[in-house]
Image (cartoon, rainbow, N blue to C red; front, side, top):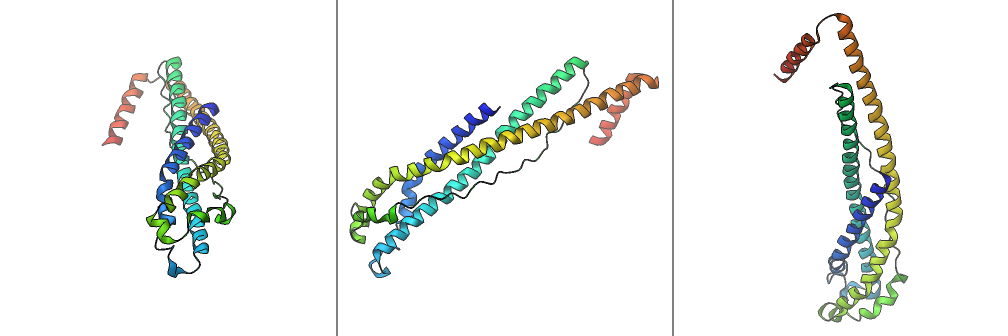
Length: 227
């Protein structure tokens, strides 16, 4: 399962990168906003750098939300795989035993991994990007903001790429352990159910009461429970 889990995680994080890359323009427009970069707001170089830090903060928060959503998708994938394993095992037991019912409810709750806070390294205090911002008019009404976005786009994408491997490794390790623990738990539960079923069959044979009567009583109890 670990190989399948690794592949699933890699695919999910690939789509995370794609979604973030698609939204970089929206983050840029929100972070470098005309209401912030104004002549009457004090030192424009300081304001420009603050906009850059806000951009990184927004991307980091969005990436954390995407990673949280990824944990839910991996949990669903892991539980689906686990359910198939248990169902296949129950079907095999039923065939080998001639129809012994050892149904097992899969209602185990999984925990959520605690991921590290995403931190994107600030690029040299944004000084190297000041040439794209001569004044607010040139930046917003001219091509300044667009040129800045074009310059930052590969830098931001690379930042995201560099952050993801650590999160990917942690996710794979966490859910691999979770699946193994859950599989062991379900195996113990299944063994207990099988022991109970075998004991029930033995008690039925030793009681001298025909099995048909026990079946009839079981059906009646089920009808009472449903009513």
